[in-house]
Amino acid sequence: MDFKKLITLLLVWISFSVNAQLELTTESEISILTIGAGTSLNDAFGHNAIRIKDPVYKFDIVFDYGRYDFDTENFYLKFAQGKLDYQISQSKFETFFGYYQYNNRSVKEQVLNLNSEQKTVLYNLLKENIKPENKNYLYDFFYNNCATKIKDDIENILDYQLAYYPAAAFQQLSFRNLIRSDLNQNSWGSLGIDIALGSKIDQIASVEEHMFLPKYLHQLLENSRLKTDDSKLVTASKTLSPSDAITKSDFFSSPLFILGILALIMLFITYKDYKNNSRSKWLDVGLFAITGCIGVFLLLLWLATDHQTTAYNYNLLWACALNILFLPSIRKSRLNNRGLSYLKFLVLLLSLMGLHWITGVQSFAIGLIPLLIAICVRYLFLIHHFKAAIRL
Image (cartoon, rainbow, N blue to C red; front, side):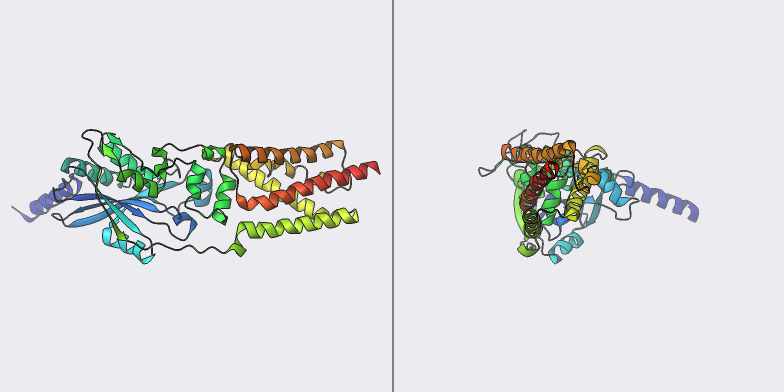
């Protein structure tokens, strides 16, 4: 055999070896890794990954969904529109584990009760998913993220014969309260989420829908059973790294404190205006401009993006987009009856917001409470002031 034929056969064999589907051995093991929360907002909810190791083939690798590329064209615009692609990635377990251990984030492992055929199917499914033409997927925080993708993969290879049995202490929560369970409610991240996301996330999540959070994927897999023989899906659970990142909270830089200070300033200025029978126009222009701009932003999130959870957002009751159009009127020294009616309409909206909060239609950020009180007082003052101006 000449040298050229030998090289050709070698290349054919290499190509076949790379593309052939690998059959995992009986010694192989597949487990779910659950990573604890980090200190930043995007790490606050933890992470999940699939670990596959086979001592015969001498590999120990990790697949995880939820990676994204900051170099993506129009990254922030696509993120805001809900059109940003995320990716599945592959790494060595040693590298993956070392990164989270270095960042003081806990790592828990659950070994799955899968036969050799199921292990092979899952492994080859992940290898297929990680191909360049398949690795991207449209991310959704609640329905298509690092945890739900893994849940879907497991159910897929088990032919959806998996039953979830929550622990006795399990309590069904709304999507919003599930988010809050991983966040300090008096934090800027929680404030932003509570303002941006609408009443849809105040619905009670089903048991399976809780699994969009990594910790609930871990909890519900722990007690899950196969419908075929009622055997447990998880055969062993262990903590690989007990450390957990500590998030420091400073009340003096929190929304409740900062917005509370702003509210006190507004109330003090309003009191001075009332006593002096005057009006600080700059405050009113700023108030209507800021609330109007926030309202326009919330409307865009609702109507101009693919996000499902930004719809029906009743934060628009205090951040009224129409306030932008009212700016020329609020700069005047007098208002006609139509202008007075609009101010009364704004007070009515704030009252409706309180009703929505009390009845559970939508829960709002606690950091907003002092500011909402100050805004309502300012509106009532403006009604009184302009009524007095009309009488004169």
